[in-house]
Image 1 (tube, rainbow, N blue to C red):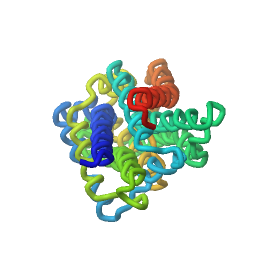
Image 2: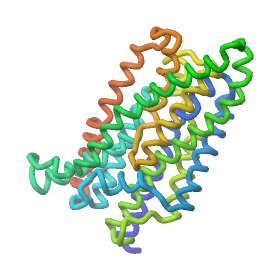
Image 3: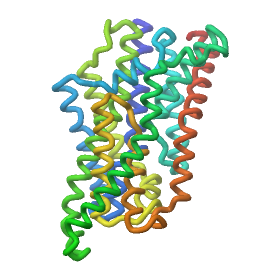
Length: 346
């Protein structure tokens, strides 16, 4: 069998493993609020989330619009320095950081771990070819400016929308008792949870699709950056299965420790989070669902009083976000160096 084909197949499998890990790492984002409000059991919640993760594949297959995939696959890293080994190293770096943060229950960003790992591997390649002083030649500045801007904008959107939606809910139901409100919102939260899981799938699975398409392009199996139908299906099956596995350590942090939620708060947090993800997805920008839902939960929790949110825990989460890009980039660079050392290929 052709050696290139075997290598590409291995990298596709590794990419799908990352997608699976992304699913169980980010499962908490999709189910934390609906579990915390006891609308669904954890088992019911992961099935619900996984189904709507997969449903997000339908518009991609129908309209063949995969803007986030294109951004991740070709608009973040200079394609001049991309090889199949660079992509493999980037995936290994992202998987490593995802597993470390999952093990310690830290709700970090799988999206930024992937971007960081990919960039770190490419920078290691440039360092090898042109020297350390030229490592930033590996990055496409425009793509990084947009993406890093939304690292700040997306969670702030989630926070603001969560706060505004809670004000609207309290005003619209100002004559109703809390118990009556919660009876309504226990049902409505099924809708908001489904919408959030859909938005999660629509943005996150595309990142793996972008990486796999980049591998196919770099290895010469396709001539232009065009997403294949089988890639879409494989990526959405992987993330859906990962979500079904669940990330229970992070569920505890996101669903209970950050703030206390009622069904009305869960509805507002999930709706705010979904809107704050779908907007950048429309703009073809990869964002972190973890960042967004954390911001939305904080916005909902602060409506009653600022101290209702455990800001010390929120600060620790922010530090995890800050560390994700450089640490995953370092992991990607080390993975590239190890591949180069053990195989002699780059």
